Length: 224
Image 1: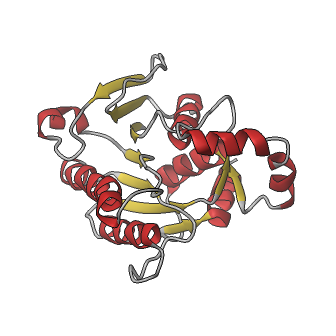
Image 2: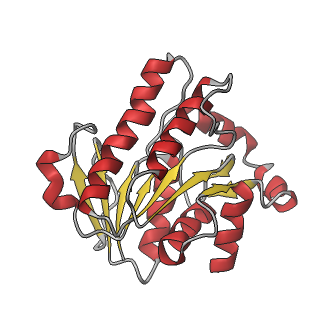
C-alpha cells in the first residue's frame, strides 16, 4: 500500500507515520507539507511544497497512491471564521480535489474532531467549519472517504504536539491519561490507535463514513 500523509509533523500525523512504518503492507509513505521531516526511513519520501492551495507543480508526485491520511489541522483559538475556514476548509479541499482527480481509487481519511457539526448551522464556529469540510469531502469521487472525529488523544512513542498550549496540557495530564483511558477506552484514544484505525479503513473499509471516538477504537481493536 502506498500512502500519502499530510500533517506528518503534527501530533496525530507523527503517530500515524509511526504506525505506517511498522505496517508490513505499507511500501511507501509520502509526506506532503511545508516543513521537511526529521524522520529518515527507507519507506519515507518527503515532498516539501509551500502552496497548499495549488498542487499543479507536483501532480506527477501525487499519483498512484492507495490512501491519503489528512492529519493537517490548526486550532481555531484567536481566529476569525474566515481565517479558520481558509486554514481548515480551503486547504483540505484543495488537496482532496486534486487527489480525487489523480487517484479515484484512493481511500481518503480526514481528521476532524469530536463535536463537529454536520448541519453547518450550529453556534460553534470551529464545528461548523469542520462540518462543512466533512460534507464537501464526502461528495468527492474517491473510492471511499472517512471522517475521523477523535476527542482526547494521548500521544505515545515520544510523539509531541506542535501547539505549545496543547503540549503543556498533555505534559500535566500525562500521569492521569493511562488511568482515564483504561476506564474509558472508547473515549480517550492514543496516537497509536488512531494510526491503526486509519490503516484498517484503508485496507478493509468501515461500516460508516463518519467515525466517532468509539468507532475509531472499535476499528483499531478489530484490526488487532
